[in-house]
Structure formats: C-alpha cells, structure tokens
Length: 294
Ligand code: NAD
Image 1 (spheres, rainbow, N blue to C red):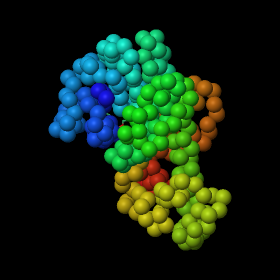
Image 2 (image 1 turned 120 degrees about the vertical axis):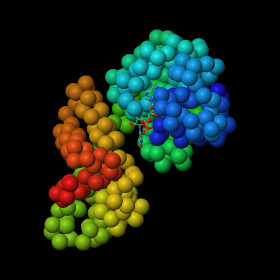
Image 3 (image 1 turned 180 degrees about the horizontal axis):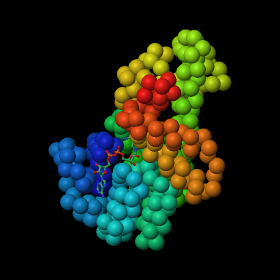
Image 4 (image 1 turned 60 degrees about the vertical axis):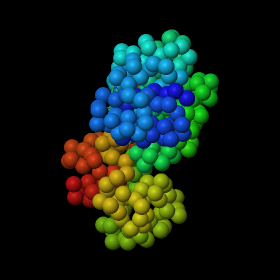
C-alpha cells in the first residue's frame, strides 16, 4: 500500500521500517531531521511536511508525543485538510482521551475512517514487530487497519468505539504501575524482615501475590535474569513514560468522575522519582526510592 508515517522517533522509526520491510511504499515526515534521515536512507520517501506526506497515499499513521501534537497534525497542520477522500487515518500515539475523541469527531465530520490505536511493547516490540495495538473506532475502520497493523504487531485488538484504545492503554498502565509499587514494597519489607529475595520470589510467584511486575519485571536482581533490575534499571519502560500515562489516567478519571486513589498515589510516587532525576530508569527503579537510596 501507499502509506504516510508522521512522527518517526523511538517508536515510529522502527514501526515505519517494518512497514517498508513488508513491501509498503512509505512517505515519512518528522520535524526532526536526525530521525528522518536514517529512514530515507532505508527506503522511505521524504515528505517536506504533514501536507506533503498526505499526497497520493491510502492511509496515514501517526506516532507523536502527546495530544497537542496529534490535534495539531490532524486539525491544524493539514492531515484532514489534505487527505484524499477514503484515506484511512490511524493514530498510534498515547494521548488523552479528550484529544482522541476530538480528532475522531473531526475525522468523522470530514468523512474519514479514524482509529485511535495506542501500543504496548516499547521500542523492543516496535523493532521486533511484536507490538500490541489497542484500537478504538468503528469495526469497518478496524478491519481496514488490521492488515497494516499486523506488519508491526502480533496482537491487534478492537477495544470499542472512539477513544476506547486510549482508555484501555491508560487503565492497563495504571494497573501496571500500582502492581509494580506493591511488588517493590513487598521486597523492601521482606528485606527488612531478613527474608531472602529469591525465597520471597519463589513463594509469591506461585501464590496469590503473582503478577507480571513480579514474574517478568522483578524489581530485584536475580530471580528473573532478563528484568531491568539486573542491568541497573536501564532499558525497559522509562519511569518518565509511566508518569506520563499516570497523568493521563488522572485526567481521564477527573473527566469520567472515577475515584482512583491508588492511581493518584502512584502518579505522585513516579513524579517524585522523576524529580530525583531518575526518570530515565525503568519504572521498577521505584524500589530504590522505597529503600531510601534515591
Ligand atoms: P519520540 O519523541 O521519540 O518520537 C515522537 C516524534 O514525533 C519525534 O521524532 C518528534 O520530532 C515528532 N513530532 C513531534 N511533533 C511533530 C509534528 N508536528 N510533526 C511531525 N513530527 C512531530 O517519542 P516515542 O518514544 O517514539 O513515543 C511516541 C508515542 O508512543 C508517545 O505517545 C508515547 O507515549 C508512545 N509510546 C512510547 C513507548 C516507548 O517505549 N517509547 C511505548 C509505548 C507507547
């Protein structure tokens, strides 16, 4: 297919490469030349701006930092104004539900199929083509998007109508943050009680305390050799990005009138970690703060 890709940073870059590898013709645009140039060398066509990216394409994908960028690219900088009738619009950024719904409404009014399709899986998943896409929009938009998304991910799910992809992403990541903080607290308490961390892992991972934060991203080195704790909390899912998602959960909870006391507490703890200069570390590094090290 003839595709446009706008926003080719840490995530969008490898995603666009996988579309190229699958044989698509990709027009790429990014405000930053340093991320655009390697893609042009890899075979993407260069677009001078968002308008230009939309010329002669059947679908556009966007992977931008936040809601304001998505609103700007779709509503002000020309994606909706310059897309040919019938162009499929897919936004893979993680953004606030309000912005996602605003772009949905504008796209629908202009007669376009639009899908909010945030991802989980991080840069590793983007490179390996194993992302999970959580989609919000109509079934027909989803069925049109599925074959494109399958080139970049292994799990493509329709979560519901407009904004449901963002809602699923926000709820999942809030749960992940809370479970990670709980896991870290358990290990810190265990340490203070003289419990061997491996013993605690062996017992909790096969008992009712079992969760992904424990069995895949174990916050102490040793029990799960591939977890970021074994490499000084580098790589993995940056605390700063977790904080971004927790702030989106706060905004969504206010908008929807939902009480999320533990989500609010988690946001405060990750804000504190970022204030201590540790926002680049994996989100399991919150254990360092609970130990009083950071
Ligand atoms: P990034 O900053 O590396 O990439 C975003 C790119 O968008 C940048 O290259 C920037 O120059 C470009 N951009 C900004 N405004 C633009 C505009 N108006 N026109 C064209 N390009 C523009 O960020 P990222 O890590 O790739 O994340 C992108 C999105 O994916 C975010 O919403 C993030 O929350 C989400 N996400 C990231 C990860 C991760 O591990 N990095 C995981 C899951 C989801």
